[in-house]
Image (cartoon, rainbow, N blue to C red; front, side, top):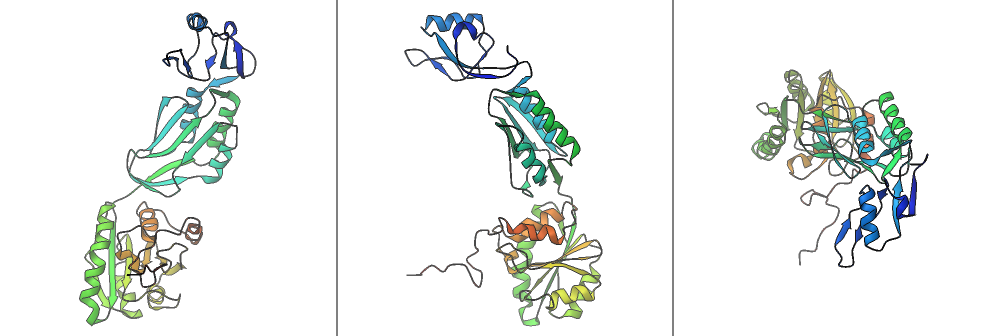
Length: 342
């Protein structure tokens, strides 16, 4: 073995201990050796019997690390809370969720690690993806058959110096209040259209929906209802009309109840009209109409994070614009496109 890693054609007599770069087949198209096979003296005799004089190999240097232990070490380095690792070989480490929850990715650190050395790659799911236990959340793949050990140490040092590059925050069992506001004439229709979709989501995420309440659509009644549900872990306000302005009925009711508005107008569609705020530590959601749809919308991006106990900031919400154009919901009042019914 030399001092540095080499790749290329070598005489077969110089290939003992080298890693075969490509699959080798005999004249009958039967595979003799698979790529990645480490050649020994007996293998050289086999190659000679097949009439080969040279072979394409990787020869690791004394300062290099084979792809398999490299991938495993990198996988362990970037894995944080509730992340499991399995290294099946061929330069891979599969990272999976240890619990159901929300995936957190330290994106700047991930980009730094991916820029350390050619062929050291980590591909992850999108940050804040809701994952089930056992779901694959990232793949570490070392592309060449070996990399300098020093570059693996670099990654380990980066991971040690930063917060976990990958972690899963588990969903917690929480209580969620649903306040529905409208007129007496719309009570039955609103209760029917909001309750089941909200319950399906909340219970599907392992939390409890408290008995929904109906109030008239005005600041005073909604504010009182919010205050009456301050014991809940989360409050959702769903109304007969969308929230159009920061001074609209629901935001005003939240401030009258003693709460504050984090943001009205989230850069995710469907769901742009969502309002996010807090009453002390209790998140209060002014829900957009798309909460009634089973299709993925802004609700599915925000509520699971809140159910892990995360406090969502204005910056968190604003950052959702990148990738925030989701599939349209045709039954919205103003879908993006209208198909000719003919």
